[in-house]
Image (tube, rainbow, N blue to C red; front, side, top):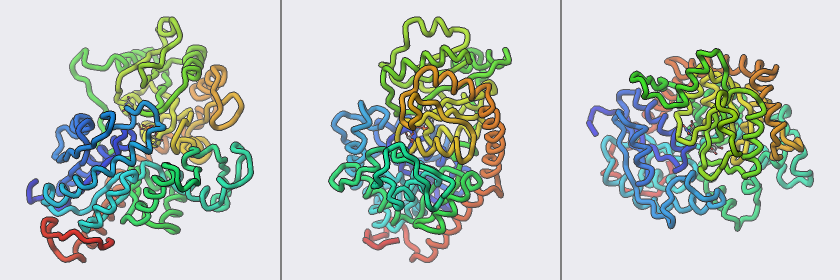
Length: 480
Ligand SMILES: O=c1ccn([C@@H]2O[C@H](COP(=O)(O)OP(=O)(O)O[C@H]3O[C@H](CO)[C@@H](O)[C@H](O)[C@H]3O)[C@@H](O)[C@H]2O)c(=O)[nH]1
């Protein structure tokens, strides 16, 4: 790495597509600052994905060994998400290799700060040893962070009320939540459980970090950003959407080079037809029974759809693709989701509400039909439907937040998104937010200014430390 760089940022994403992709976008965003060098840490099996994503940039990639029993290095490959805690805990085996690289391999220029995923809690110890400020990347927005904290502090989980009964939050009285808005593992208060142990380590390491880096923008959730920054530690820095500044939709200049689903969307655009995009992220688990109802609901809705199916074992009803031939397309490959959302024919997104999907939909000005499945997605769905009002929720058969979705419920909800009043209102609102998001990442916008401030603060922090290079640094246990 050359001497012309004044700043050097280390990024260490967690090995899951929904966590890695945004930090790779953030790497590109950092590289727009010409004086900044970026080093990204990853594992052998994730290296090709990271390298392809950073192709054509000056980012350096460091590969650390990750010895797992089954050779799985990304959560989307796990046979079941019940193995998540085992997988996430195993990342700690990388700590000595990470520290070896910090001490010997990537010493020039001196590291300004590191952004490591909150699930890699042990990186705080490494950052502390080498006197490098650590920003924890949560993957969640400030709304969900605040709601998780409030639910814990207000004792919602311990209350005697049924799991689906709504409780008003004292700090945010316009918000009602139920126990089922949270994963059972997150509510588990048994200190001996894997979930409790892991979450405790993660939360306490975030609390002792220099800051929290958030893939969001201030105008989207100012009440919640302010709440975090006024009432708790560490400070949150909203510098997103990470996917925006450097995104130019793929331009397929050579005929025949376009993926078939983009050609299909082009055809729909020519026919002046709108399309709903259907995708549930990189790790959702869907039962065969539920999968069948999705297929039937889409077929009966009579809307045009592009459906990305993640798992080979999810089988479509007999003759499905023939019956929907003219108005539906099923894709079983990895797609450029942002390119699809940006396509002019796409006017609705049936989504599991992973935070990246929600943000990408906001940036593309596409309203959402929210069908949360796991993690913090139920909170994101409340945000979409009740807080920022850019869509609606899918109708479940018993009205509960985790209820089964029958084909009639799906058909009605999809129609409402594409042709109904709630869809229309959501579309207007999300288009305004798309403009605000674009402004946020422009020079002078809130996210751009926050990132500048972060760099300024880190420079001041460095100047206060004795000048020395990393190679001269004696590992110590001083807190930053
Ligand atoms: O074929 C595909 C499939 C996915 N994606 C991208 O993969 C990412 C998926 O992220 P997200 O929508 O957030 O879904 P998950 O993969 O489910 O994300 C996990 O991580 C998120 C960030 O922490 C959480 O909000 C979610 O709840 C959690 O499930 C997005 O950038 C998509 O654009 C593609 O580009 N092509």
